[in-house]
Length: 278
Ligand SMILES: [Zn+2]
Image 1 (cartoon, rainbow, N blue to C red):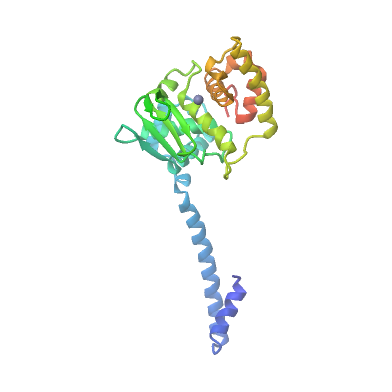
Image 2 (image 1 turned 90 degrees about the horizontal axis):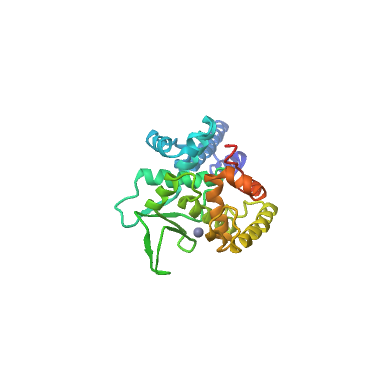
């Protein structure tokens, strides 16, 4: 409703008012509209308070202590990283399994892992995956009757993590194995396909180039001629992508020197280069 129409409405509803009353009501209506606008903005702020609130010093300490990717960023990028971690923690439901609680350390580091992978995409938060389930160790999956270190379940909208395996992934930062990045990479590829606000953020042409090169390398691996990826990468295109992401962040020099084209496409796909940090 415009200011004029509100003033007319007030006039119509009180035909006997004199002109000063009409002016007063018009001013009042302007105030109402302004206040509504302001409160609208405040409400928008309250919809995502985790986003605007800075990351607590306790959480920053956890990043400084345990997350080298964060430590090597410039001060400005660190701030962006912190904001993304804060928002990620705020929008996800962290669910403890076989442990009493998901600790702050778990929340911060699992979120930091997701932010590391998606740092080239400021608006991507893997929004389909609302739940992060944390087990203390490998867990038994009743679906396929085996022990798992982690999985992504789009039907339950969940990323499942064994904390022990997650920590081991970052404890050995150069061995090309990182459970957290592996599972988040699965979530990222699915997120790109799921029809929601974060749908189709990958460049289609780049994705196509990726798949062509990935298919070639999967054939090499199957033939026993892997240049650096473990055999599991040849399972299917999703596993190949997840294993490539692990190597991209943990062994970028080797990856680039052995498979420069594949590495270059992954730089374009993830919009970041571990050899030239953002
Ligand atoms: Zn996998």
